[in-house]
Amino acid sequence: MRNHSATLFEEAKSYFPGGVNSPVRAFKSVGGTPLFMKEGKGAKITDVDDKEYIDFCCSWGPLILGHAHEKIVKNVGEALLKGTSFGTPTTAENKLAKLILENNPYIDKIRFVNSGTEAVMSALRLARGYTGKSKIIKFDGCYHGHVDSLLVKAGSGLADTPTATSKGIPESVVNDTIILPLDNLIVVEEAFEQFKDQIACVIIEPVPANNGLLKQRREYLLGLKYLCEKHGALLFFDEVISGFRVHFSGAAGYYDIQPDLISYGKIIGGGFPVGAYGGKKEIMAHVAPEGEIYQAGTLSGNPIAMTAGYHQLLECSKIGFYQELESRTRDFVSNINAFCEKRGYNFHLTTIASIFWCVFGKKDISRADQIDASKMPTFSKLYHNLLERGIYMGPSGYEVGFISNAHSESVLNDAAVKFKDALKATFE
Ligand code: PMP
Image (cartoon, rainbow, N blue to C red; front, side, top):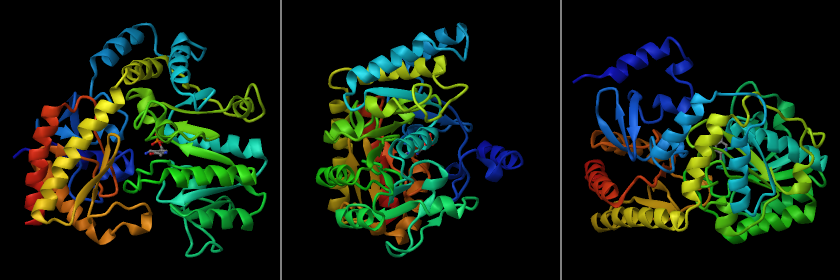
């Protein structure tokens, strides 16, 4: 059998650290060689050995319409002919901003940047500049991009010093981050007491989907809002995954909770590198050049990326888009779960909107420390059984799966047959 991916990966190792331009792509967690993809259409992708896969990674979330959606391809093609970048304002930025702001009541103003990390980093500066405070609360099990102050993990107790999860992060930066477990308001209240008048914001993925899918209760998120208001801190929803995924207005809309700041990425760029942050008028008024908090970008608001984002979000804004996607996802997940129940596997898929995650156990969980790490070798086995049968997912048991609008009922029925077969090969 040909294995062009393996040859290409060997070559890539001489160019890039670990052979990749983003760590999880290297397949370290599941073992084996990363697949080099050559094309995608709708719900399917094809690798360099011409093997086709139903894609549940969807570029880690951005492709909510599937690959090479005809409206995005056509409009981006036309935009390219007019020039790729000007470094001046363009109508493409206005169009995308208008579509978002008219359909998302949770932000008044928005600023486009180039990635989710940049969005979080910039909004964090805004939170600190606006409140005049330095410390931030972050939760164990939430990922917010590779921002220095957020690549931090907890010590063993609240009073313990947190530590960086990467080398190269100064202790002075780490010391301003307080790490707490999810789904526990008491520890948040205690942190506000302990670090009185020092906390600028509480940052959370309202749908934590980077370390498994750790669904949170609406009451918990409302509790965070209450505590932030009480202590003069901002509530910051990092919606890089959940934005335009669980609802057009993201998790803010899904749960109907008004945070002070929101970051976006992924879907907002229609498959191009875009991020954004937004919030209330009075907070956003502090961003340069209107205000004194600096943030800028050579390619920010790039017309090609804005065009792709606009045409993707235009489809998402159609009536019934999210209900339909959620209902198809629920059917797929229920189908798999009924099979697992019947065969007595200690496994199920958990879901919210069009996101799902493989849980090795029967109950949903809400905190990072509830994840059974000893089951990751079983995930790797399942992963390779899925690949063999033509199902592609993010190569780690901590990553979630995404269903796009191109995953029709018939694609999902086909996927379910393959998924069940892979489960059988893993558990029997
Ligand atoms: N925040 C969240 C919630 C994310 O999921 C991610 C990326 N997975 C980021 C921030 C960082 O985004 P990017 O990879 O575009 O920098």
